[in-house]
Length: 397
Image 1 (spheres, rainbow, N blue to C red):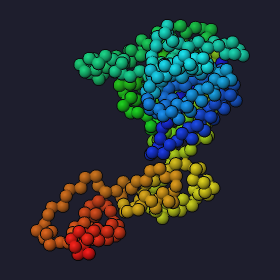
Image 2 (cartoon, rainbow, N blue to C red):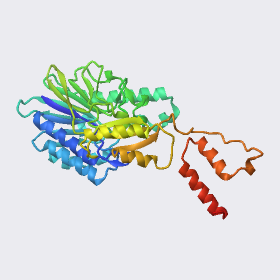
Image 3 (cartoon, rainbow, N blue to C red):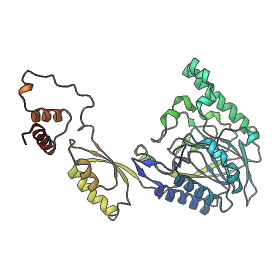
Image 4 (tube, rainbow, N blue to C red):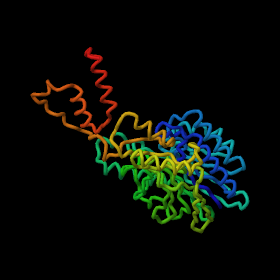
């Protein structure tokens, strides 16, 4: 049986106010193409289809088109809710999705109530049993009173045990003649963060050991951590990672989907298939002059088209001055974020200079110049504007 494992699409995610919906559409179209070219028997989407619990209509249309595109050739699709998704809404669409060959699971269910999905591969007739575990918030796993009255360590242990109990129910029907799979959206201990996860729902209180998955599982398809990684465990446990970097913290990640081949009684083999249509994210540093040289080289890379090439986070190695951001974005149209390098930035807390006896005799322009110095701003134009405004207010201009 051949399966495609993907997760953490985060459709609708913006980057520094810039919509990436067109880019997300290209990436998801590529995933649909991979599923067809590789003739997979099923597609597993391990949560975080959306970036927010209230996605825009455009984001919802893109996800629906993608799921329908995957299922159009008779490929079963199973998708679960992640911590960014609105689980009840996914469950509300279950009947419609089911008619199209798409299984949506929003909230945690027992095996008897839809927490286990049975599939049969068309050409070979092989069977797969999939235990599905959407994201489970700690406040639902541990009663509110216990969260208040017990220690964090006790609550963590309870969350761990609760997930073990849920998985025991879901995997009780695993058979020797079936490909036994678990799909879950959660944090496994020692997993490496990708850089763009929601930290409050990824920290120790939400982490469980990889040993939580039964040894007879052929493959565990995980979502939540955005970095592609294999976890040390008695059975194959893998995060597919996000198919495109959702933030600059993920610029070093390599986006892939996982092609999984498994058969009863045989450990699964996993092949990473790179996603190539996503635009890269890059952080660059330099003075305006150095950035100008960089801009020339990057223009050659993208043939002068600002719609190509990497999105940029720019750290400017100069002191702040009026118009600096505009200069940088004129040089680098793909710059979504422009900041002053911390070495040149104003201190976050600067003690106010003590008033001297002679301050009353000093010209306000001189005092303003001194203030700008405490903020690491050196711009004669700002000071000239201050002088003109001061003269106008005082009637000297």
